[in-house]
Image (cartoon, rainbow, N blue to C red):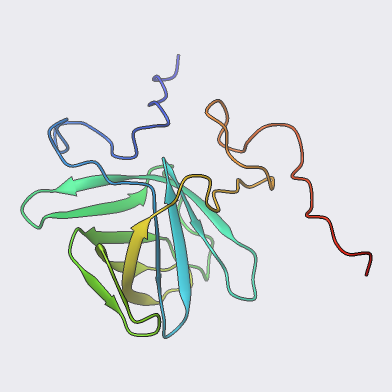
Length: 161
């Protein structure tokens, strides 16, 4: 029998190194430039938003590192990346981050090891309700399944062009 699946509303894993009193990481999107990159962290999944390439999905979780006051995210599925590619991991600090392009300050700073092999820094913010969490099959995720309900997303109507 397999171990029980953690509830989808708990993005941070609890255990000996991550007690229930540890701060919970919110669902968030992190982004930066040089190269341009973006990663969404939603529940126990990360979605690397590829630039001129398909999105990539990773199962994993946040762990609170109390000494450094950061959330570390890394894969949990035990898979190693395919030959010639890299894994995804992140360290996110609840510390203000100034975005030089958008000229805004965001509540979280990040250092991310991208699946392209680049190590980048950037800013993060909480995801807004319903914002961009699209599963692997092109459906919004539901509470019951990580890939969403069995109905397709309806395209937006167009003006007959």
